[in-house]
Image (cartoon, rainbow, N blue to C red; front, side, top):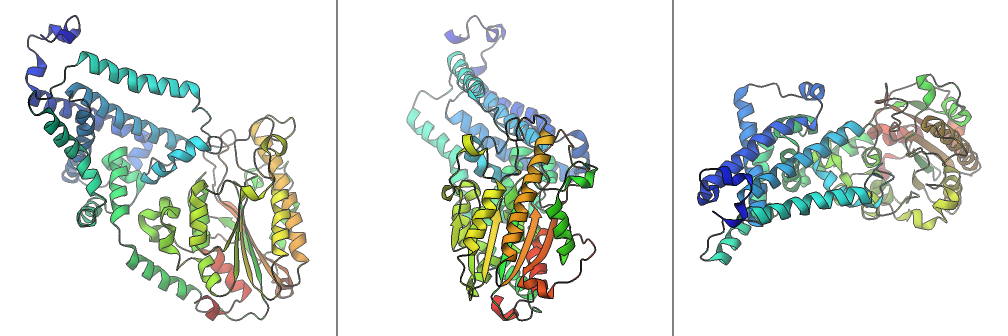
Length: 539
């Protein structure tokens, strides 16, 4: 018997498992599959799993299970390639899938969406911006436990389990298995392999529905399949179709003689809490905008409770998320594909000055790369603000942001049209003690910040009204706040929006309308129609 096995439980087995390497390896792989099939279902709560269960028979269910086997096999091969230990490969594979399932369940509990492939691109941001992702628990203790588990358990397996690497031609077999484990992943990026693979996976997956596909394939396999589709989808045809749709959307717009200014203010985590019976809050500027607006009401959510970039891109692009296929979860990863169809790019080509203002790190959500591609000629980000968190608070205040916006719009020559997109940060959580005076309750802190934002909005509106040009303000909340101490989830997650004529645009202002529900991708199109912009200028 192998010396490492003496004195442990394996010594009780009447034969040596590792004398039958092929059978042991196959058995360990099948054991890993069985455990993964069982644990994958915990990625979503039982009620949500039943709600999103596919409506087909056992035949298709078997196909879904078989489709997972190659993914599990590749992960198993990876662990086996670095160890040549079947038991370790099984334990590593099971842990790998279970960790993904646990992360997916935690994400769903927090923001009601399972893990998606584009979340992998945000891993570095999660650790870099822990407070904005509510990930402050990823502290030293977390890392100690994680490293002890990964390296401690791996070390135990390496010590107690014998390797089954053949004695002869060891380097050859090591290289062969590394090729088997890593080769298929590398080939996914090779066009002649990727395209047919993506087409096959698309036929298997059909609709890009994260919840349904998580139920069908489990978390990690769903992530892999969506990633393969994302790599292989042909965007030239999609973009051509979208471009035609967008041209049609502005076909009926008529002319405008003076150079207008459009200011879009995306208010982070803004929602009028009076919708939910909170009568203590006072928002006089919001009430004022409601009366002056040519259109106002509730705005549907691209995503409830987070992922600002999805609402942001929907507004900027005018594109329905379903129309951009698998890109919808993180559109800025491939912003260049949509450069010809989004509103800022069209306005810039029509001679408008375009400016994106956001008082946060320019690399967050890859905005520093995406926004110029989408048509913004100027970016004003956190590094342009004199912000000290210890002195000024966690985020740049809306009052400071409003003052900066007014300063920038005043630099715009009177004969030039301007499009300013402003993404605020002040309302974002966490709403912890110290953010507003002596307040300690998260709801009270959020309400107080809302009132501060309302006062800053008055500052902005009053300043814009003094300009000698037509001005249009589009104000909206990107999503409901993750204010779980108040509601989880919010009974109505729709935020609020207003389309308001200011300065010289008020001369043709309409009387206040009844509330109208709207989708974020229709906001700018609706505003342009109210502003009567020239149709040819946006072609």
